Length: 319
Image (cartoon, rainbow, N blue to C red; front, side, top):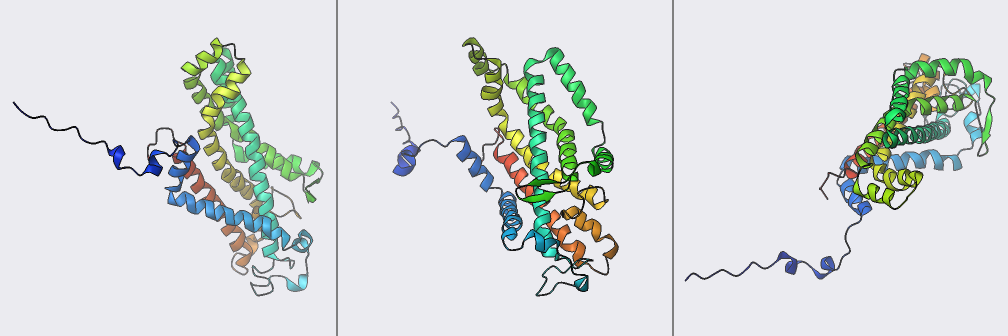
């Protein structure tokens, strides 16, 4: 008669007591544990934080009046102890102008993304939830928007409408009317990509058991859409919004470099590059510092977006 070996002792007994008593990990905690494993995302977050501190905190060091003050006797001065980033063609301090230009570039990126996310969620949610003719109508409209060249539309609208909009005062600062045109055009032409993502998520979730249970209990359609399905689509929305900020900043810099973006005296990193076009070799500091800031912030946002995509992926098991 053979002897049976004793059952192996569970590994649970070998765990420390603090781990046995620890509560289960929440979704937010799991996402953070995945995110912090992404070294480039952490570096991007640190760099993004430094750039925001530079733009926001620098406003307490240099006034906007100083950033716009010109002294032609100091024109085209190279970087020095008095002017760390040098001066431009009319003697304005480039360091101070990059600070206030960064505030405008970030403001354009954030407000354009708010419009993009709002429109994308509404169109995608309605198309995915109701389906049928509503889906066909909204998706054909989305495809029509997609075929419009975004940069071409930006150039045309900025050319013909920016000069007709008066300057606005916001948070104690005066902005040229071209800022509104750029924000609206970028926001209202970038949403189709997000709308298609949200539609796909709604199509896969609307027949789930928890949605069928919500319908059976008499939950209204708006509550099902915005309180039950939409929170389960937050991961792709967050990633798309993050990358949309970098895209909006790049688009603004592009058209401002062509001279059709934000009008002076409002500074942005893009129109600072436009002013340095004729001084690429003779005054490198005029394009170097605004160009590096655009490069750094786009890289930082893209790194953070990649980290968020991996961290919020429900199929990921790495912790």
